[in-house]
Length: 374
Image (tube, rainbow, N blue to C red):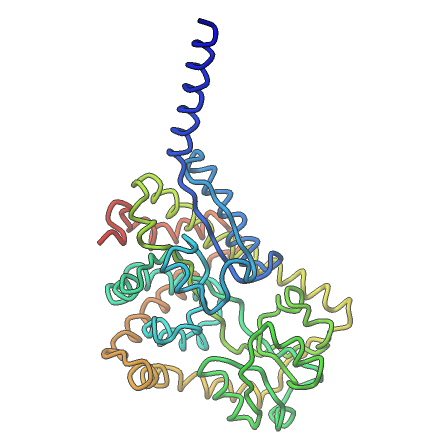
């Protein structure tokens, strides 16, 4: 009898354990940046902790960083195919898959404010029908946008004027920035951020166009001691989930992801910009010099900005094959202007004020029972 009771107890315990495991859903996330990068630190590590807590443990998470699970260019297809359930996508690696995104990306040269950019692309992608069709076509669910602070010139020598730019080899990717580099007599070089350290160290490039946080996260401050404080646009990217996985979640779990992603959108921005202030101070202590550009260099940027909208339309139509690129760019521009106005007098470190706007204008308008469920 004792053995029978013991056996029944063991079976019951195993059954309870299996049932508990069945109630848990594993969320595997991938971001190809290093753990120290603000996107990884604030955008994923903190967010996944919040997902587990707010879901009451019904969602368990695992984060892969760098290229441990997927290479940078493979993140779109990897999330689409369910290798990762959620992840960070740099759309410029996949223009043929997401031509609408790549068309709108050109506008990042104009909207360099972190919060204006990230809030505008998030609203546009989550609430615009054409953009939603793009994500559905790729078996993805758009969860939020992301923006870097403005890109700067990180160089091996002082550059402050147009004359200083002549003949300089500048790491620059995307349409508008290489065009600007050529317009001032520089030579655009298309290399990845991960290759730029070696390029700067060996003299293969004179400057990299990157956000200031890359001084630390990519150790640029070891090989480049000059930063020119021009604003060369921002880099916009995507937080997305696998659509099949999204459909397997219950409504409460989808609500948790949307709620925590709204918070993440704000918290990543605040954390990122505060990190930049700290990095600037540390860089100065390490001998990095920060230079204000002369007016002639600033004037060339203004000229380039005036050509962004027609360039985006031309690129979207002729290269990416977006039939209504002009209308799409106009819709986005309207939303970006709205966010410029909304944020004009808001303290960017006031988390509650920022979050209130994000919920009111974006996430509060989404129904977790319907969003991306077609």
